[in-house]
Structure formats: C-alpha cells, structure tokens
Image 1 (cartoon, one colour):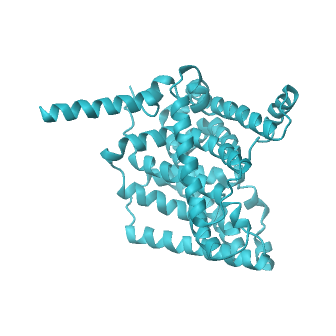
Image 2: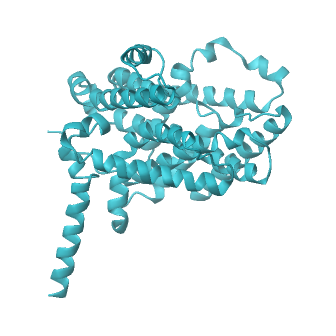
Image 3: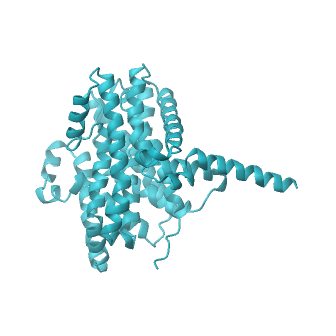
Length: 378
C-alpha cells in the first residue's frame, strides 16, 4: 500500500496568498485603466505581485499531480479528480449565467440554454479560463506523469532548458525594442508554448517542489525584489508611453511573473513548511475553499459594480478585496454546510467540508477549544 504523502504546509500559505492576490488583481483592474498618479503607482506595485497568483496555482497543481503515483491511474482521474473540477465549474457557470442574464434584463430559459451551450466553447466569465486550462492539464496528467518519470537525468535537464527557453524568450521580447523583439518571434518556440505557456509552469512546479538543493534565502529574496521592481517599473513606463494600461511585464503565461513566482515558491518551501497552530482554523478554511472562492469572487465583484461599489484608490481597492474575500468565505461556508449542494459548489464531499471548512467544522473546533479550556481549569 502506498504511503500517504505528508501534508505540505507551505502550499497552504501559498494558496492563501494566491487566493487573496487573484481577487486583488481583478478589483484593481478597473482603476489601473485610469489616470497614472500616486494611487496608480501603489496599485501597480501590489498588482505586479498579485499576478503571481495564477502561476503559483499551476505550480502547486503540477507538483501535486506529477509527484503522485496515483496520477498514472486513469480511473482515479475520471472518478475522483476531474469531477472535483468539472462539477463546481458547471455549478458556478450556471450561477454566473443567472446573474448576467438577470442584470442584463434577459433572464429566460432560452438565454440560459444559449449561455450553457456557448460555455462549451468560451468561458461565461473571463476568470473561468483557468478552470478550462487546469481541466485540460488534468486530462493529460497521466501521460505527463509517465513521460517525466521515465526520463533520466539528462532528460530532466533538457525539459528544464526548454521551459527556461520559453520564459527567456518572453523576457527578451518584453524588454527589447519592437524591432529587435520581432527577431525573437521564432515559430518553433511559439509552438513550445503549449496551453499558452501554462504547461511549462505546470511542469516547472514539479521540479521546484522536487528540488533537494537549498538555495540561499538572500539570493531568492534579492531575485524576488529585483524581479518585482522590474515588473513594476516596466509596467509604469510602458503605460506612460502608450497612454493606456500595458501589462506586458505582468504576463502570467511566461517571463518575469514566472521568475517571481518561482522565487516565492522556493522561499516558502525552504522556510514555511510547518504548521502555525493558532492559524489552523483560518488556514484550513481558506485553503479548502480556495477553488470555490476563485470561482465566485468575480461574480460577486460584478454585483458590487452593479450597486455602485467601484473602488478607485489603493485603500478602496484593498477594502473591497477584503470585503469580497469575507463575503465569499461566509457564503461558501454556508453552502458547504448544506449537504445536497456542497459538492456542486465546492467540489468537496460534505464529510470533507465538515472536517475542513464549513460551519460544522467551525462548531466542532469551538467546542474542542471550550472543552480544552474547561480541562485546563480543572
């Protein structure tokens, strides 16, 4: 019988950061398309960091899948793993369609059916693209697992060189003048950017998580700070020159954001792989609900806009991000406490939710704390 994998605590903290970051970058997207001023500069710094969210999600999924022998079992993929992604995607697609058709005064059976049919080809809301991509990566994960684990050392080096080549080309095309950048439009490298480059990030996560060599923290911190500075400054100058928000440096498919995400991944791996007990309830809840928070947050943000909540300053963006996170968490904890719809909304069984994130879990945790306090007094 295969030994159960030890819990990866640093993934919990990275997931929390990524969940908050993805909300922040969507909340900040509208004001960043406005005038470049001091508030814009502050949001630009935070957004440049926040764009590591998606690469981090792909890296963590890549490591978890490509390091697990169960990934080679097609029956586990079809019976357990895929439904956990497909079912909540379908559920939240229906919710998004209901909201979009209602807010557009077009709520009807015909509009819903048309929306569901079109969703087979195009995500109903823009942020659902991640789910379409990760589902496709799950579908080919048995092949990737078998291919990677059949390689010898030279084969792994070769794969890493190809991944580096894709990101390096993106970095050079971002920083070089247009005339020189066009010379890097090499067709065979274009074709290496499978899944818009996210396949490289997915596989890179496996190598980062499997890396045994410890890299000095000062190198990783310096690399992260310098990369964040380049992304932030580059975004500012490109935006100022174009007169409109330009996100070349914030490309989450390849390039600088992948380098920044890699530094963060290794920093947390080397320094944060232990449980913080007093944070356990909050960490467990947010991590367990991170997928459904991702699916819900942009729908909620659209509702904010509909009632006139449209943040413009750095403080307003931060407050709306936190409000969005809190509302999503409370709603999802409640939904996960209702057995018939728990799996549809979260991809988790009711029992799993009761042991990790719903109100049953919170009640049991409070009950244990009270009982322990009574025992200490006695």
